[in-house]
Image 1 (cartoon, rainbow, N blue to C red):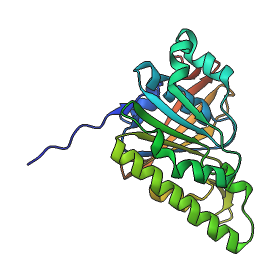
Image 2 (cartoon, helix red, strand yellow):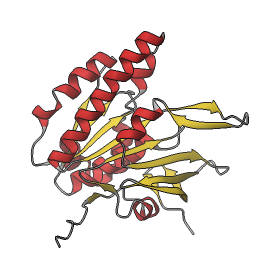
Image 3 (spheres, one colour):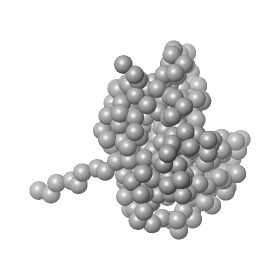
Length: 237
């Protein structure tokens, strides 16, 4: 009986997050990280790109939310900035159509050195264009096609795909509010790994909940992490 090949990971460099993800962001799979503003989604994505670059691998980073900061990159990369920065290929689509065109042509940027693809956030430009029922249907179809294409590239190229998403509040049948990612059904359908980030009562700390890992659902495994000037780190004991 053939053994399955071990899963390779891009480490987040935050021990607590790497532990619940069983090593980090898995290559060949799609990981969705979603949460409210200022929960550390972009910081985590940049930190993964830095970790990737330190191993001599490239990241294709689609900054659809215009949140990528060179200052933040410098803080996270530290003394490695000059060697790290050239290995992070940054794209900044200005509309959902530009995002679509970019993703349709992304394969031309793929090489054996690319180990990570990031779309931060995958739903920001989509959300801007949401309108009536017909337009929303067309946008959902386009988003679904984008994700299908990204997932295919990730699987065939053995590349880790990291998607971040904004959230909105919805009311349950009991009138209790909860947060969910924008375009939840589409994003969760294509994602084998799902990590939800939330604010905590401590302004320096954040909470992470593992909802799904390699296709298996969990009852919200929870950890705490710190969001600092230097990036996403373990909580000091």
